[in-house]
Image (cartoon, rainbow, N blue to C red):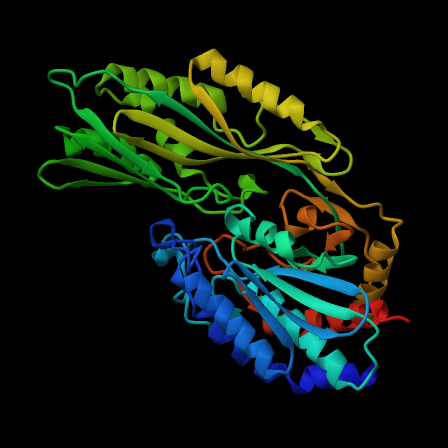
Amino acid sequence: MENVHGLIDSDFDALVRDLTDLLRIRSVLEEPLRTDEHPFGPAVTAALDKFLDIASNMGFRTKNIDNMAGYAEVGEGPLFGILAHLDVVPEGKIEAWRFPPYEGVISDGRLYGRGSNDDKGPAVSALYALKALRDSGVKLNRRFRLIVGLDEESGFRCIERYKKTEEIPEAGFSPDASFPVVNGEKGTVRFTLSKAISGRAVKNLPELAAINGGTRLNVVPDEVKVFFRGASAGNLERIFLPIGASVANDGTGVLVTVSGVAAHAMEPWKGENAIYKFLSRLDELDFGPAVIHSELLKLRGLFNGETTGESLGIACRDDISGPLSCNLAVISLEEDRLVVKCDIRYPVKIDGKFVLDGLSSAAESIGWTLDVLESKPPLYVSPDSELVKTLLDAYEAITGERGEPFSIGGGTYCRAMPNSVSFGALFPEEEELAHQANEYTALDSLRKMTHIYAEALSRFNVE
C-alpha cells in the first residue's frame, strides 16, 4: 500500500487540475433545456463528457448511458461500485459567494466552487484512488466501477436509468456524505400543497399579484420576491425593512425581495428560510384579494416557522437518526393558484405511512390539495456488517481515529443500490457547506480522502 499512497501524492496536482476543470461547468438541471439528447440539459451532459474524458485518458474503460449516467471501470472479477454524482444545485445569490461559484478558485488552501464537496470533488478523488491502486501494479481481483449520475439532486432518474440495463454491484459505497461511515439515511417525502384563488382585487387596497421564492426542494430558500400592484413603497418599507428586505418601485408596482440564508434541506435549521420571513409579516400587511391573505395565514399556521413538522402533526424522532426535519422550500402565486413545495426527512425507525397520513390530515384541515411527489423509505445497514466494518478499518488506518457509524437526513444513491453505504467525503471537524454559498473542499482534506478511498478499495480487492 505504500506505493499506492505515494502515487496519490505524486498525482495530486493533476487531481486538482481535473477537478477545477469540472467545477467550471455549471451542471445544474435546466428543465426548459431538456431534450432527448440532453435529458438534464446540455451543461449537465458536458460535465459527464468531461469526467469520462478524464477517465478514458487515464486508461479506464468508460461508458456513457444515454447522457443520464456513466461509469469508469478497471479490473476483473466481481463488481464493486462507487456511487457519485456530477449534477449540482443552483448557486443561489451570487453576491453571497466570496468567489465566483463556477471558476474553481484556490485560496488559503481551499478550492472553492459549487460541487467541490457535493459531489464533484469526491468523485474525482475516488477516480484518482482507483488510478493509484491500478498503477501500483497490484493484481485487481474485482471490477471497480465508479458510477456517476446526473440527476441526484432532482430525483434519481439517472440511477434508475442505470439500473434498467447495467450490472448492479455486489456492494459499494457513495462518497456523498460524511466520514467515518453513514449507515443510515432518513426516509424522504416531497410534496406540494396548492390552492386555487378566485378572488378579485379590492378597491383602495394594493393587490398581491405574484410570489416567487425558492429554487429546489432540497435547499432552504434564500430569497422570495413578492410583487404588489398599486402599493405604496413607503408603507412596505416600514413593514419589510426591519427584516432586511429590499423594496423597489418600478412604476407599475412595488417589488419586495426578502432574503434568507441557504442550507441543505437535511439540516434546515442551519439556514434562514426566506418564505418563513415573508409569512411572518402577514399581520402587518393589508392587501387584496382578501382570499390570498386568508390562505397565506392558513399556510403560515400549518408550518409556523418550524423545521420539526410539529404544526403539521408529524413531529417524531428515534434514537438512531434523531428528529424529523421539514423544509418549506418553494412558493409561487401565478395564474390564480398558490403553490408550495416541501421536503420532509423522517427517522429510520418511523413508518412512512405515519408521515403521509399526517400530511393528508394537515392539508384537509386548511382545504388545500396535497400531491405527493416522492416517497422513499429510510436506509439502514447494520454496523456489524462486513461492509461497514471494512470501511471503518480503512478510515482508521489513514486517520488514526476509530470512528463510529451514524445516520443522516440526506439521501444518497445508496438507497437505490443494495449493500451500500455512504463513506465521506466531509470530515467530522469540517463545516457542512453543501447547497450553501462558498462551498469548498480543503486541499488537505481532498488529499486525505483520496488516501482513505484507496485504502478502502485495496481492502475490498481480495481473492
